[in-house]
Length: 311
Image (cartoon, rainbow, N blue to C red; front, side, top):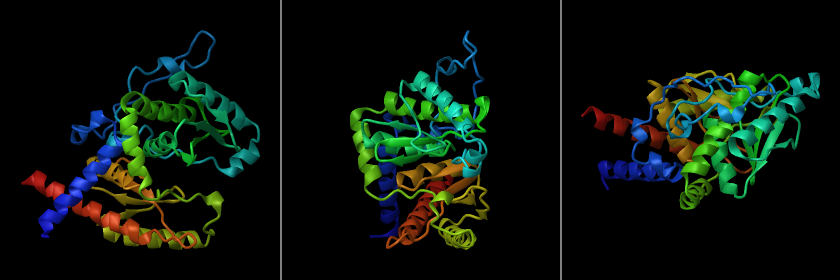
C-alpha cells in the first residue's frame, strides 16, 4: 500500500472518530467553525438580588470540542488544598451557588462534595459523564469523572462573575449540546469511540504519583519527545499535569484539540498554545508508545490536509 493510500485511510479514520463524538450538526461544517471568541454575556439579577442564571443565555458559542473558542482563556484548575485549609467553610457557599446555577441552566441537580472543593453531578449513563468530562476540559474548566459522576471545582476564593460563572457556563454550554443536539443513537456512537482505548488525562498533584523532585524531569522528558512527534515547539505550562506546544495559529490549535480528544487524549488550548496531558508509566501500564504514535499520526494528517488546502 503506497503512502497516499495510507494517509487517506488515516484521514478517514480520524474523521470517523471526530464525527463519532460530535453532534450531527457539526459533521458537515467542522472546518468552518471559528476558533475566535465573540465575548461573553454579563450577569443579570432577579428581584431577590440573586443571579438569574437561566436568563443570561439564549444560545451558546460553538463547542471548544468542535474547534470553537474555549469559554475560559486560561485553565480553571482544581482547588488547591491550602485554600481549603485557610477558609474551611467558605467553599460550601460557593458550591451552593454553583449548584443553584447548574439547576437553573440545565435542570440537573448537583450535589455538594463528595469531598471538599467539588460539586458533583450523577448521570443516567456513563457516556454522558464521559463526554461532558472531555467537553468541559476543552472549555478550560477542570473536570474529573468517576463512572457516571462528573466532578467540578468549587473553591472558597471563587468570585461570582469569574470562577463561579466559569463553572456554570462550562456545564450549561456543554450539556446544551449533549442534551439538545445529540440523539440517543449519536450518544451510543460516542460511547463506542470513547471506550475503545483508555483516556489519557492530566495527573493531579494530590495523587502523589510524582514527587516534587521527580515532576520537572518527567515533564521535560515528555515534552521533549512530544515536540519531536508533533513537530511543534514546546512552551512551559503553569498548570500541573500539562505540557504545552505552540501552534501556528488558533485554527491549528483548535484542530489538535478536536483530533486529540477523538483519540481519547484530553486536550485544551489557550489561544494558539495547545496543552496535552503529561504522560508517565503508572504501574505496569506505560502509555508512551501509544501517545507518541497518536501524536505522529495527527501531525502527518495535519500536514497532509494543509498541503491539500494550498494546492
